Length: 301
Image (cartoon, rainbow, N blue to C red; front, side, top):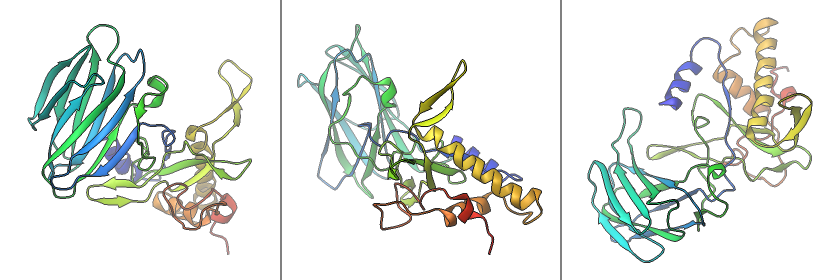
């Protein structure tokens, strides 16, 4: 819903909305695969000591019907759990399991399966959990799993075989936004934490990010006064926000192009983006169309 709201307001009057793609690409919080008829998928999830709770989002197309089984670190198993809309509740050792099969929404044909692992006492069972996906009817078979941000997880908690693609964080997943990844401006190298595309919309894919800007060891004002160095796509996005403002000033305020806003700004920024070392194909899922360059983005012959 937030994505669609940003899509809508991006088309209202003279808006250009720049959003960082998040810092989850190097974490172990995402994995994905494709189910095939009569072939189960087993996803392994490591849970470290003293993990208070955990939730897992599984996204798939609603046309695919799958059952889910859970195997705890001790080998206890529940399932296959059939698809029944609403909450199903189980207890496995020191962990209470809530499983919820969702419905498609007015904004998406996809279906979310939400699993929450809660401690019976203080902490949930540590060790390797297994999530088994059993196909019953497969059309596309594509699935994606996400954990919460690594900032709220114990170090080492994550999927054993993670995937760093489609790690954009909401709301940079909005098509109408200018989605901004990060690179190291000192070494001209891609920042491995920077959220990557592609963006999945239904059974198709959309390229994201749009471009990248410096997001490693950025000096800026600190809370309480003074200056400090910060890293993340939240510090790359302001460079592009400023660049969009400069383009709009040149076009609208200075009278060179009264229609320089919205998707037109995005198009100019994409065209002016410079290539970074190590990438041969553009656009790509890591740096989009390349590194921000305001000078090359100005439409001056």
